[in-house]
Length: 251
Image (cartoon, rainbow, N blue to C red; front, side):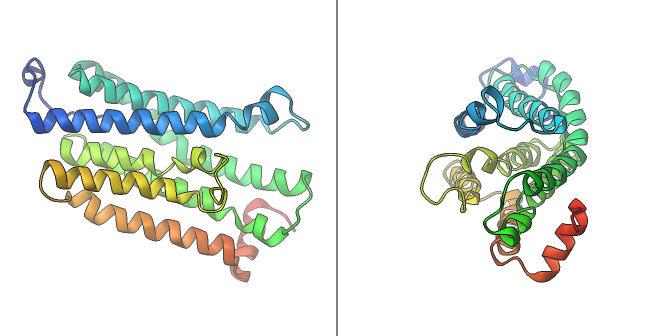
């Protein structure tokens, strides 16, 4: 998010072709992720916002606002890099830092509150499966936090920074994918994230001739994190059900 890709004096000229292609790619990815988020979440608006049968906890509204702010800022930061407005990009980066600090604890709190709310208010046809679903948002928050915080810490190394910030945002793309009316997507929503990871690695091969170190290290770990979350959810081992009950304070 605080992507210092080039110095201000370099920003005045068109820049090398590779740098230009990278800025085009990451802007395209930012717009694509945002569009999919809007498309997926739009299915919830009529049910939960316009015509709600049950009012959701206020914390969900705060979480949604902060989440939207991150997506808007990520797109804006990508536009600023594309247009080489580095000074504005740096200034807005501090807002990104604030969001990156707020989002993890807010996301965890919202996940726990909403899991308890859904299980308490709505009848469950498969209680263990619904309870174990807590693994999905928690794994998403973990992936986002690690990538975003390391990315911000490496803001002076632009090739690392831009990739880590991309991964932090791509890792939460499932929030939109999982709501799309596509057969199987409600279960295999992590596939959307994998598509973005794969696109970034293919782009690296095409532009710099190899997959960057960030992707070689981070993507396998992100995939492992998502596979582990799917295991906890779909297999719901007894120890995870016990821990989930304790986390959301349901006896």
